[in-house]
Image (tube, rainbow, N blue to C red; front, side, top):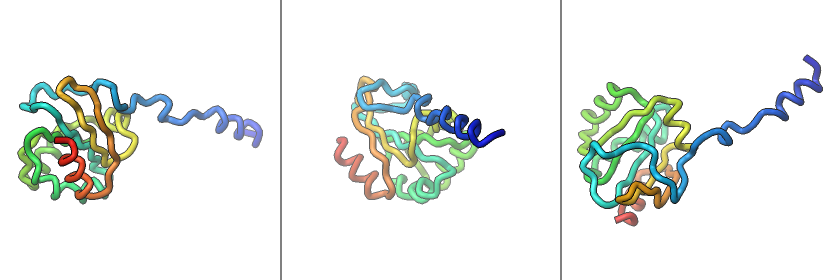
Length: 139
């Protein structure tokens, strides 16, 4: 392969995010939360089990309960262990790795959904204090 064709190959490459259906404010949240007893507004936290910041956040989430949902890219078994370890009283959902990362560009991320399932707010976070502030501001 020549340098010219190599350069052309990279020039033709599109950013993978152009193809992704990333969550956006004003759009309907694409996952069903109907199986959970949630009221008015719901905070959804996306945390990858491959992300150190996400893992470090998990113990701090145990103070949340109603109207909070955690979505991970771990297996159902991983999530069951997480629920037991941290004594979570809120729903924890599992998405396969590709589906998870097609929805969110960065983890950890928080999404506020209204009663109609419309995304009201999105925030990338780094520490538990930001989660607490986001939840308090959303009530």
